[in-house]
Length: 376
Image (cartoon, helix red, strand yellow):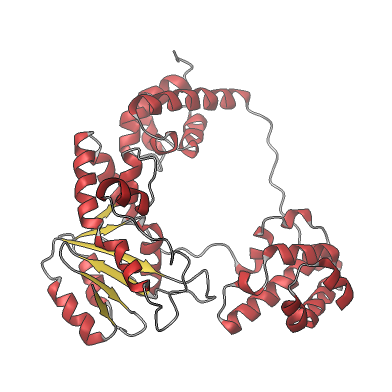
């Protein structure tokens, strides 16, 4: 295993990858620790070599981007979703020819689809999870961290060979190819407006009026501190603490302390700021108080619900017969779309964009009969 912590070292290793038909990739970020997340390590493996790249010391990774974009290079990931998103976000890199061992495991109906479980089952390799929540932004890296990171790609080429062979034997290789093609389109997407994020905190709907305004102020304070310190927001103030403070709306240090929502250190260092935020929320004009948008209530559609239940029953039975998790064969969201569509033919299922071709081929007739009430 090589540790590439200079541009010249990376460039030399990248030169050896030209013409390689296969490249396993993984990334390590630090969203569990940092406010401003980024790629802090990139692991690369061919069938013979493994390297761990330090992007903090290697400013130009464009050679990797060129390899990923080359259809002649099969790029391997385990659970590519987040890796592809952050590689797009930080570098604009995209995969053109992908193999995802996690997706392959789902299609093989593996009981454990985590990398550690798969390596243990197929290669008798035991992976130590000691650094699973490590802070990959720290430098120098702690002893053992590089080896741990390297293991995330080192065995993927061999694992990929085993899984492709099994998929072909089961007649599911075309399923995997379709899934991989969809994953290749993965891009970084920014979720809803930041100013509304506090309303998405679990438990926020238990608050009312000025309590919500207090939560808004506490959330803004936490974001400010987290940004200044480059710390993950929950490490500044937990959601549960913000909810407890917003609900009680304490007016002095004693009341805040009695809530036991803060550690003694937080009470000492941030108590005044938190009480000031509470006061701002409590004094917010009534017309500025946050409100939750209420969804429109629709009358129950008993026919739709009956169709959906029939399809779930038939989907589950088919999944058991062919050895596949029901949610992989056809997720509930797909079933809901079919139930709303009320198709009259399997071909009409193409109107549901999220449904895969292989899902229509395997389950289309069963779902159509269930939709039309022709079960049994």
